[in-house]
Length: 94
Image 1 (cartoon, rainbow, N blue to C red):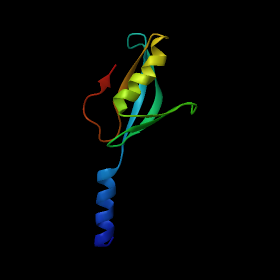
Image 2: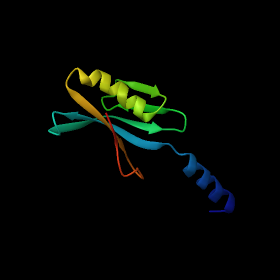
Image 3: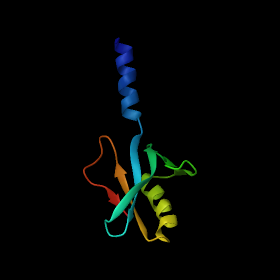
Image 4: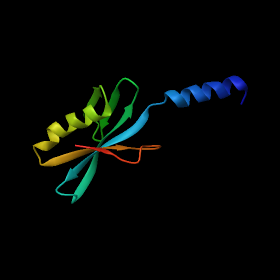
């Protein structure tokens, strides 16, 4: 690559959104499933359900998790925010 392409690559990497999943926990760590995948940008998060029937734009990944949990809570399900690829070592839970 030339120098300009190298700089553009660095800029794109620095501004790339972070990938996360919203995972449902059924029972007390008995079972789980991925409910949706999202991209976290500096000022918002985009999330799609794995079924493809729900798309959400929220102010943050944690807020998206809370919204997913609102519908899951009636079924006795907890939700967790799981960072993927270069993630912090802990997850944020609900």
